[in-house]
Image 1 (cartoon, helix red, strand yellow):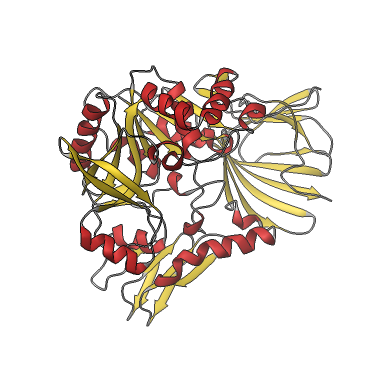
Image 2 (spheres, rainbow, N blue to C red; image 1 turned 90 degrees about the vertical axis):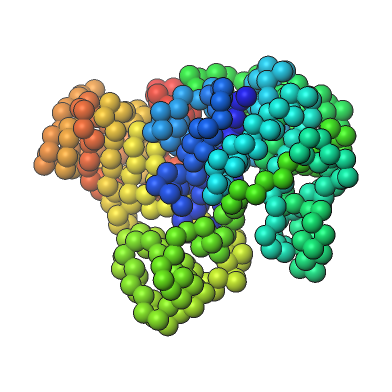
Length: 469
């Protein structure tokens, strides 16, 4: 069986921690491991697993590769979607990367499952049923009348301990959700599936042949770069956008549902994260440097500052190094409205954190003004930035730890701790870390325009777009 991890979401309702360039699946929200890492690690009790396939967007490829490397996993493939087209095309691409008789296990990368051993038994059952050419989904046994999830209605026909699917239904209003819960015939739609790759593709050909044809052409035109499979963007742009439910599962007669009661949570908002986080005696879920007085049943997260809360109940407070978000727990679904406002105002906080990760390391924007910007830059041992130049800014570099190999025009120079160098505007340059420890340096930019798009790359080892010198 081949696990297929879908890692294309942006998690806007968990802003300001989750942002478009660093969404929730890459964050350690519940354990010390990230949600992407936990998606793989909770499968450790399932026998005869193949290495995973991960489907993600181009911007996240190095985070996926690095986080898998941290848990010593070499992926079968990392498939890069040039644009998001919902789950059905993503699953189709993964199925095309497998053999027709391979069972693929489709797993979103941002779920919490409190009882992994129960989940593993359900996965084993799903593999067994998928071998019989069923399209298997996992239906979460509901614990409350939830209006934020879609539902699956079970049929009367049973297949071993699973049920035929009678219907997939949209997110209900409260009264309808209450009736679903009372009937016992409905499950929450988990978005997890298992089936043979060939069976899924055959059903997709039957119900959405255009989608399959575009995915096949885009996959055939893909470029392979080490672990990355770069799907042909010009072809994939024409792919219809649809969920796997709409494209196949609602129409096929092969769909069956396995009931799953394993402490599942999709962590879709701050209230959901509060539910799965360890709490103190006052019901508060607290992370970071936090003090509370007479505060109850609240979620309080601090990344960089002391956060003090007095006399609050059912509140969410989240502090990062560039934003603070405060909301009643029953209004956290509206965080997405905040993100929309930020995007309308073209504020960078909608998409990026102050600390920005790159394949060579990261930078942290410490300070900025109209004509200056200061960054702390960390370069991993052996890593190199691209050969590049800037039209509108000059850069001053001060090494505070490690050694930098700086290419500047036609010269190369080693810059060690407490030494500095200057990169004039318009000069082609490159920064490398030739050492065995991380290189840490302070960069001060000055100029008329300091945007990240003022980078002209001429050579890059990470596959980013370059120009000819």
